[in-house]
Image (tube, rainbow, N blue to C red; front, side):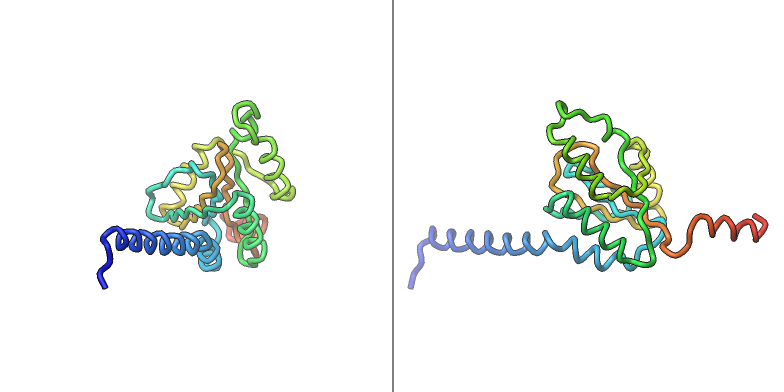
Length: 184
């Protein structure tokens, strides 16, 4: 049986489309698997970033960036839930200082997103710094410690949530007390 060239091309194109769709679907949930695998390996001084879609691909070797294809609040909720469930770490939340100054006129939907972020963070203490200060802190941290960046499909500026991991069973107060006892 002889198949026409156009039929072969259509079959090949269909197969490529099918496998691309399957791979994209698997990759879309791959971020959850990566989070589940990496969080137990992470500790204080590591960062997990839930980033908007325009967040840059940083080049430091300790930074892993994944495009989740998922919603910002969905990814943030999953990360916060995972960190909360992990006994060895706790979250220190950083937000861009610029977020408070972005107007609804300049970025329609920003007010609703700010409110949703506030609800998702549940009243947790939040450190606000200028965006570039946080980027430099991440870059500096990545020189020694791993950073996991989970890019979402959000298209609003200055909405990335930077989660610095801290020790879950040792507080800053205990560390200061220890240092005093050591004479430091």
